[in-house]
Image (tube, rainbow, N blue to C red):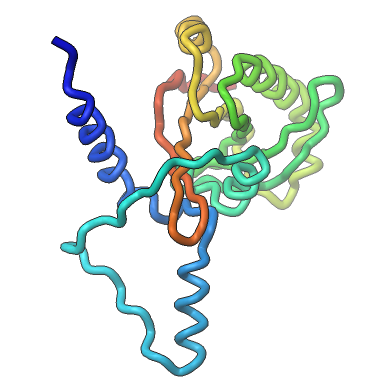
Length: 212
């Protein structure tokens, strides 16, 4: 007998709703927040902070998030990916490998390349590896470029790949990469009353702690 589709839909909805309280700070649109600040400036009562026992907001129909929106969010709020993450440069040229769109430092002051796509794309891994290779081969240049940043060059750069999903081919290839620290993050686009939002889900990665 086929499984009850309504029950499957209910389980999926509950799973998404449970994750909302962990990702409320990742919204691309803050229309409601700006409106609340405006009311406060006009002399009205400030909005009441939600209590822990209040039910979570209900997500609307999912929406597509384009690359420009995603890059803008991650540039302004890199903690959406990981606590302590901060962006230190954008569109860093890497000769024939194309630009590193987002270069960041993690909480241990390790360089992190953030690769982004708004669709499943196996070449995201190849581009990321090429950018990683360029960083490793240009440490002297990076030291001069980022003298004001406390970068720990004793640790090899990380590769953080963000996409709406990853193909079986991509996931299989990850099993054979042991010398790079790679984390793959799946994002979800959701419709909100004030606009479009996303939340990020850590999927899988290579946890190698390789050092130079």
